[in-house]
Length: 102
Length: 271
Image 1: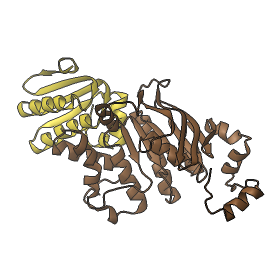
Image 2 (image 1 turned 30 degrees about the horizontal axis):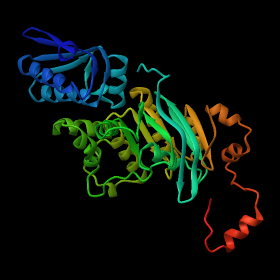
Image 3 (image 1 turned 90 degrees about the vertical axis):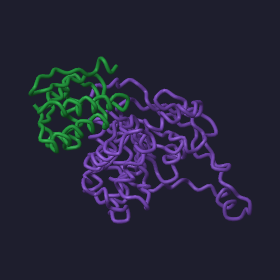
């Protein structure tokens, strides 16, 4: 599952992390690790959520931790193309007003 | 969220239970689909809270079967019970917050008990849930410092902290002013719509029931009087249902012999 549900494209300036399928307690640690690793080596990280069918609170928390890390280290972090389900969860917690969402 | 609305997530079959010799539930059936909000209504003593406690596995029935997410709750292993507990959230009438813990610690408790998430993640998730119930920034307060409505919302935050598939409410808006009660109703609807949670709500608040229910089950004397949509319940010509909707108290025809027995027999018990 970890091989399939997350991959990334990276250059010196930007890392785009593509997540798909379901993100829950069983794999959110992998998302978190990937985001934090990318932020340590790249000035800007974007997580593409277009193909995420379900994300639980631990998955959303991984995004929040990414933003927390980026803000405290002068990096840029954002989300892109959240699926309808992801967007509605972000809106429920009003995190749509916190993240940069493209 | 895409859901298979034909999937039954709560199934109760022919549930019978007694308190002493008194029959409290008398052959109750219940079938709740995924993503459905089922409201259980009934007068005081109708068995609605007892039904809830049985579905949660807190009481053992005399007869009958209860399946949650396809699993018979009385025939599953300890490990399956643990897994099921993580898929269930309960919001008790009293709130049932631990008075010695802060609001944040109360909300985080299930995450600490059931997961191996690190403290930073637990903090983020529990505070996010407080934001959802409009208690952002209240995590350091003690339950005694909250109003009644805030306690209910904090309890709701704790009940959803594990992102449960099934959510149970016992009188979520009882004792709240109409504005706060309406906020709780809106929250319940939002959780169903965004997370696809299936819910059972025990309430005697008619306005709330009509606002949130996909279907309503009315219990009377431990029996399922009627199950239907809000419109079907409103149109029902069953006298007991009409009494309930019009808030008329129950006036059973008096049985003079039984009445005299209740007054005079030393060992009289309800049957």
